[in-house]
Amino acid sequence: MNERYILVVAHAGREDTVLAARRVVEALRDAGARPVLSADDRAELAAVDAGFVDVDVLGGTVAQSALELAVVLGGDGTILRAAELVRGCGAPVLGINMGHVGFLAEIERDDMDDAMRRVIARDYDVEERMALSVRVKDAAGAVIYETWALNEATVEKASRERMIEVVLEIDGRPLSTFGCDGMVVSTPTGSTAYNFSGGGPVIWPSVEAIAVVPLSAHALFARPLVVSPDAAVAIEMLERTDGSGILWCDGRRSHDLPPGARVVVRRSSRPVRLARLHPSAFTDRLVRKFQLPVDGWRGQSAGTAS
Image (cartoon, rainbow, N blue to C red; front, side, top):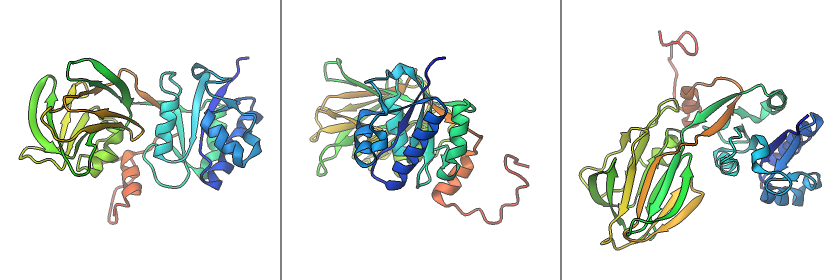
């Protein structure tokens, strides 16, 4: 019988998260599966709980390709970190919310034991979420950096005092030139994150599209845009701009952008896979996250529009 390797992603910053991680590790071991931690997570967790000292290490004793699933204890930020850890191997990510209401976490902490039983039984569905492929080219057109994003890629000014001047291009055609604080290129998954803060639209995860939102643009036409999921969005840092910029992807990976740099964003050929234990209406997540008032609703049952 083949070994089953399950990545557990958590950090030692909160006592309840450490205790939850210990329960997950013990549940996996009791079922004959092998829990795995990233090197950083194991070092941090083992420093506060010796029960993590002998857990297998991702990239050390266990190859990324051997992972079956990632169980994440935390919020959306921790889930983004987990997606980075399993990028390239196809292992789905199951989020267990440990406090704040997030859009990516599948279940709440009170349902953790049942969730682990279903993980062990492989009783879950897998949902694919569109991701972005991001390339940075220099003024000569050479690719100098490549990465990806689940939520968004942002081009931002590097200095608080100076804005950046950019030209926005869609599918090889220039759309507008303006000065701004930055640009956000978002997936539907990321539409409730930085895109939302910048005034962009909320996009249901079932919709395939790319949102483009200028930040504090000095222009008459600088409205949020929604383009085809197959569109190529390019943002060029004009060489005449006074300030330099910086690219951020999911708030985790960054690259400096000198004047003349060009950032090209398009749909990635490799989606992010999320494990789902039960169907959940995105509308309900919006209501919980933003505490939206729904008093007076006269609907008969969930999922009906009549």
